[in-house]
Length: 426
Image (cartoon, rainbow, N blue to C red; front, side, top):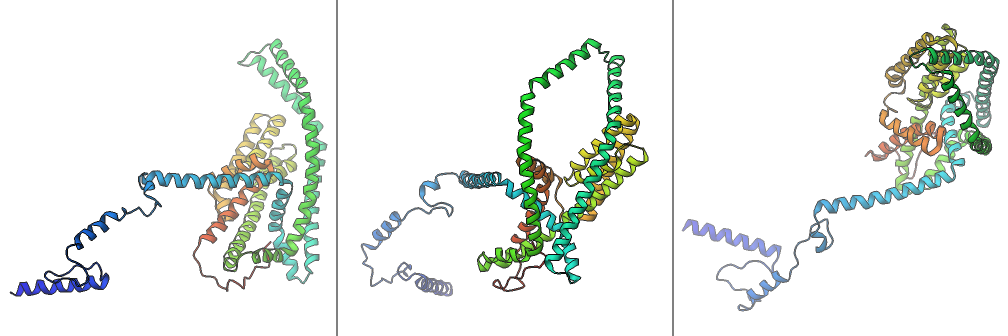
């Protein structure tokens, strides 16, 4: 009797709970008839409702036809069309950048120069210089330094070219003698044949050389235009960079301003750190290789060191290529032993740069994986030549910082409609 009472009590509770959830479809207790439901027709109506109800559709589909497609195939198709859209947009952006590269590339170089010169402008501003005067002094001083260095390099090359040409001729004769008396045993007729073939190839491709010279003239005009644009853009970036950044931020929706402002200021700090660290590392590379060139009396030590300094701005490959030029000059002038010593010095400096200087100076803020660096340099060379190789790695560093800041879930320090922009931001 106690068990029957417990079961009746639990059945009553379940019925009451079902009525609270859905009074129309609640199960009725045995022996109690619903006054609103006719007895004979109730089962057939319930059955008809169940039959007419459509089958459940998966949450990732919008129709029963999609449910017949395997889930993995639906995911692959969704990824595919999104990647296609991203690829089309990226291709369009690259076409636009390629069309207006004469404007984009100078602006990118101006940003790099602004990041390099911004601390000097800040020092003059703290010394109570007017902003325009401080910017002009720093820009003119930078130009004077670059022009003076290039003048010294060119003059030293011009003075040493006759001696290097004579030694190069001696080196070519030594190579010819080695080809004759060495393990190859090349005869005079074979050497003359190879020389004649080279002359024939040069004569046959003279039109190509002429076309290249004409295109070089057009490129020279573009370079001059780009230099003028770089100077103007650098001046205004240094003087009015904060105003320009605030104007760009205010074009965005209010809710997104603080996020974009934070990412932009962090990216600018990363760019400045990268440029200054690169200059310091390039200077150390140039000094290290230049010391070995002076010790072993290799000609053009200062121009070759300057070439190493400029090449170091292209990470991983730049300093190696410029160091290879120093090795070739040592081979022509002083023989294979000195060339091997200079090669060892170049490799040692590269190892010091890669394992000590780069991690120590640049730090974790601008650390980029070497594979990303190589891919970026290759893509930059394909898209914009040497300039693309110079700009690719800092662009990757800036995008890395910006994306990390935008993806971070942080609370803004200031309200979204009161964005504060750092005064040193470009």
